[in-house]
Amino acid sequence: MKIGAGVGNSIVTHALGSCIGIAAFDPATNVGGMLHFMLPDSTVNPSRADGNPYMFADTGIPLFLKELYSKGASKQRLIVKVAGGAQFVDHKDFFAIGKRNYTAMRKIFWKEGILCKGEHVGGTISRTLYLDLTTGRTWFTNAGQEVEI
Image 1 (cartoon, one colour):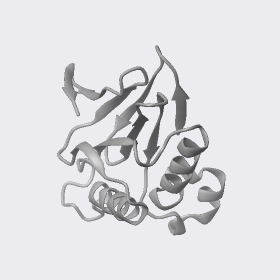
Image 2 (tube, rainbow, N blue to C red; image 1 turned 90 degrees about the vertical axis):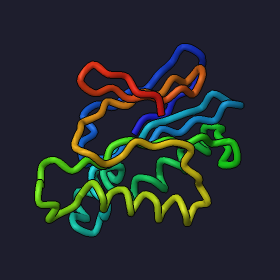
Image 3 (cartoon, rainbow, N blue to C red; image 1 turned 180 degrees about the horizontal axis):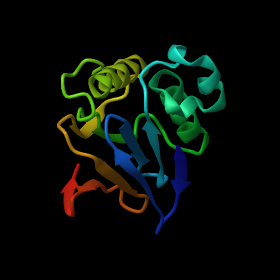
Image 4 (cartoon, helix red, strand yellow; image 1 turned 60 degrees about the vertical axis):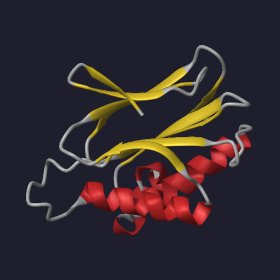
């Protein structure tokens, strides 16, 4: 998880496979951040969640939003875009981590009253997600291709 602000700054997270990257930006304050979470539910490993709550959707997303708001972002102005949630390690979709991550995130967003303005999820690709804190532009790259979200 990373929060930043100001013209000329950007945030990036690499290797979003089944993980999900959430980019959030407030255009009025230029406060933005990115969360890269790996698993939907912290109850599978409470000690790990204590050490790194941002690793899980259920603990990381609320903390991420709280931190954004403490830095001056407003829920009403927040532009949220997401990428990731791929399924390529488990070809038979037995564990469905990417789908479960996405579902957990959507439930939390719904409870928090957060609307997602753009997303690129699923499939079988790894993504590197970028957020420009000057403009709020959000995009990802994969195999040399750049895709706007």
